[in-house]
Image (cartoon, rainbow, N blue to C red; front, side, top):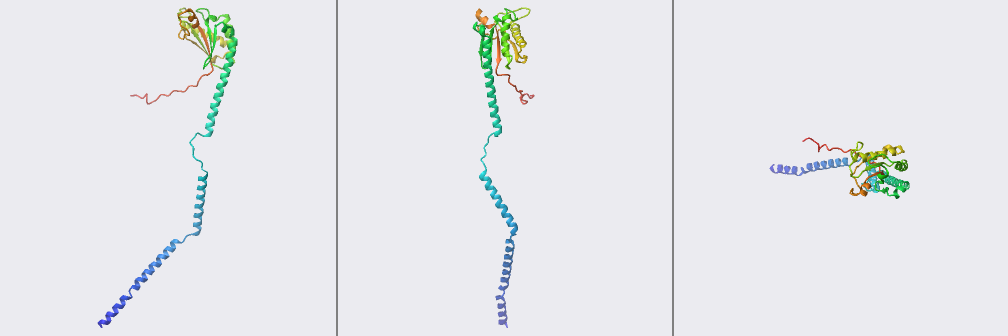
Amino acid sequence: MARRRRYEDEHDNHERWLVSYADFITLLFAFFVVMYALSTVNEGKYRILSDSMVSAFRNIQANSSTQMPIVVSPPIALAQKQNQAARQQEVDKQKRRDKMRNVAKELLEVMAPLIEQGKVRVIETSRGVTIEINDSILFAPGQALLQPVSSRAMRAIAQVLAPTDFPITIEGHTDNVPINTAQFPSNWELSAVRATTVLRLFADAGVAADRLTAIGYADTRPVEPNVLADGRARNRRVTILIDSTGAEKGQDVGIDSGSTAAK
């Protein structure tokens, strides 16, 4: 009896592996089913995704092949405007220079007799043309009234300058010999009134008043030493400056708030 029971137990133990094997096969089948389910793709969605990616890559290639290198430079329109403005300024300057040369030529023709006598000088400078007139042909000593001969000469100059648009500055100069009269307490008053007298004649002859300026320098700007009579005579003069550059537009100067802050 003991031997038979032992034989039966041993038979049962040899068949138990089938259960484990069946469980393994079942799990393996379930794994492949899950993997197959995950690998199933919606064909319609796949095609849409594929077409989108192909189109995107085509656009990137087209843009990369036609894209130009980036250059940091001013816009073409702005650069062209700046060049045109610079060229126009140069053209305007050249026109004013040519016009000034014509004015100087006419003044030389009008003042030829006085130039030959050494009473008048016409000087061309970077600012324009300067007419230097000895006061001996303009005024009597210590006076500011124009003599008849000089009045005709001044009117001839005014007729040349009236059609132009150049600013005109009239300067009065004296020697260092002091003057002290009721009308002219010093050379400052004498030089200023002489310059104003010429200015009034120009205005009456047709030169626009807004182009005229009168300045009296007294004896502060001599062209010759005031030692000899000839030098003093040369310093007694009226100068007419015809400015070809014109008036410049100024800009407001701001005050730095930091530097003016209260301490």
